[in-house]
Image 1 (cartoon, rainbow, N blue to C red):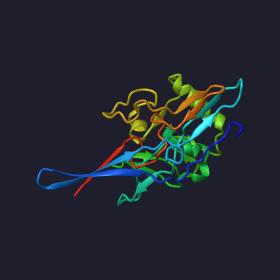
Image 2: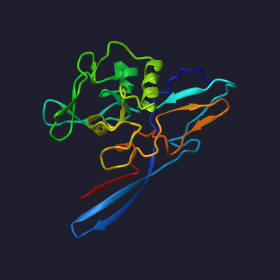
Image 3: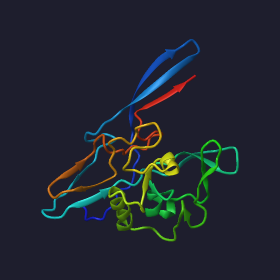
Image 4: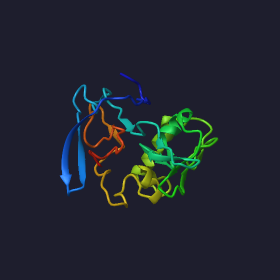
Length: 216
């Protein structure tokens, strides 16, 4: 029982994959891992929020699930491997809420390293961040995005932020990882929100992909 606004922070969980080995051609051996989703109690994706109010709705949003994941680039900047969660003006919402957790140096994206995510000083993406944003500040962004505001646009995943595919529209690039995913909504009095396939809670290397493939 909590009183809104309330932030549930991320936790580490154990996830399970089924593995499959198969051969393609004569030279490569492929390994495929298929994520086993578990939305039941005790599962990695289980959660349940009940609105016990008799007359007040509860707004909710999903902002992000972990810090930026990077790898050495061989140059002076680290290369972004995966920038999880939702962000605004190239600033992860997670860091707007928790600026003390943001990177202190800039990060690059892409093989040519021409796209930069700025974090030096008070910068967080294209925003000058001097103090933490409130839940209400962030909620205004989500409301505007779900109204398709031309002035406030939210993005999910690094490529979307760079190519302009907004959260509530089909992605411009050729995949459908965001299909049917939700990031904002309202829980009516007496109703509940439970973990389900429309909510991407897991910060796996490909947060909206169920299959990981490798070869050797």
